[in-house]
Image (cartoon, rainbow, N blue to C red; front, side, top):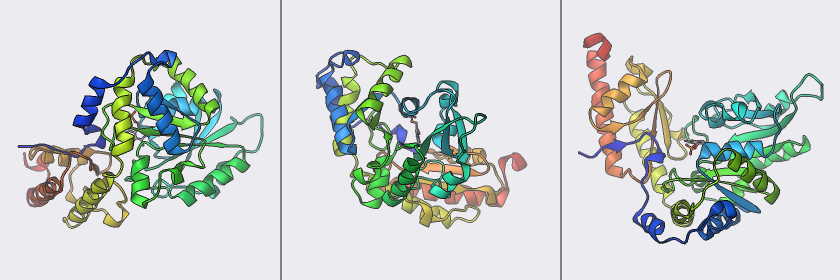
Length: 355
Ligand SMILES: Cc1ncc(COP(=O)(O)O)c(C=O)c1O
């Protein structure tokens, strides 16, 4: 029986073409900037995103960290959305390593506006940490893959500029955001100072993320990457699949979005599960199973008995993410399983009560 793994789009395996690229790609020492494939990937990424330069990093976490460090000094303050991945899921790196102070804004489905920044802006005062940077996340993971539109980004960045604040976008899934809005990714990147995006999520490459921005900022990020031990040698074996990811894998993300819609629509009809399928914009489906009277951990354990994997979060939240390894039939099977498990729970109660 095949396992339906909906925990994350990071579980996607490389395509045959990517595996071939690993074997055949031209290599060199990237710390000397002599790996032709890495150089090609970085040029491609910069061009694709409409920026001067790009830097390959080992992960999204590292890319976010070096982006932020390249625009701040220790003791500076950074404005982030309250559920930003950078704040809650990156081991506190920007504080622990970057020495930065977070200032959180509660967004609406992960999105916030200039007024929200205005409300937390500090006037110059010797007691305050200087605010230097605003971070946005597109798509927003915790909010359920929600997208920032070009006009929302533009308004925010223009406001930030008037207050001498830079803007960094955590665009781990930026191509999902572009595909969902049927626009060129350029539209989403043109106003931000730096952007990081991942090759190893829905785009299916095995490893790697990129930072893009001005040459000056990317040069600084390159120094920080080296400091963090992220200087790689024959990194062309990562960059080869990365080029294929950027050139060939973005268009198919619409299939993942369609599957996510199908999944959300089906789940919303199950008694005890709550979610609004209209809020699902990309490939992440978050729903609440509190109505079944069990924990999200119990729910995902029960799904696992039927070879369906999902992510248990706090307070009854469950996350399912569609990706290249998930077909329409997998969604149909998952819905059958969810229906069956929910029925069992409604009839017998939680395992704690019955076992
Ligand atoms: C929005 C967002 N940013 C950053 C990251 C970090 O990426 P990585 O797991 O490659 O460190 C993730 C990972 O899931 C993410 O969802």
